Length: 132
Image (cartoon, rainbow, N blue to C red; front, side, top):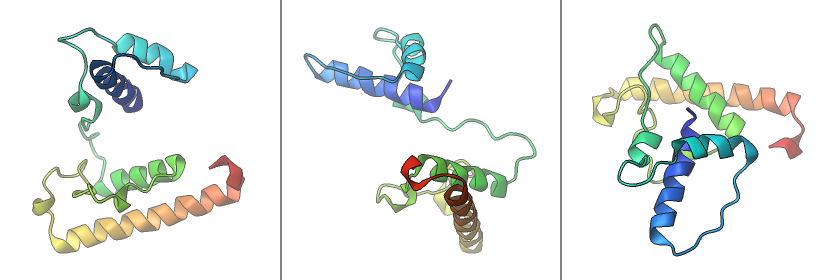
């Protein structure tokens, strides 16, 4: 169950509810999962399911989770932290941003940027710039 497929399915359902007609191009790897997730109303999936954060794996440190986020940001070439709607950059560690101590938040951000730079350098050594 990939979050991207759940999100796309939910997005398509919302578009279909709002539009009279719609033309959608879906990549082959996403066609089957979307077809499996598609349920007619009232039980169709929603954005809550598509954006839920799974439970933390036992013995997984906060730093390990932050490093995974850095890897995904490099692989997907995203700049999510730069978006104005992001209020909590670490919802998978704690959903309440006010629960973080200032020093803890600084440590997490520093760890993220160090990991991000490390994996970007690796990507730049291994991949041609046209690939990303």
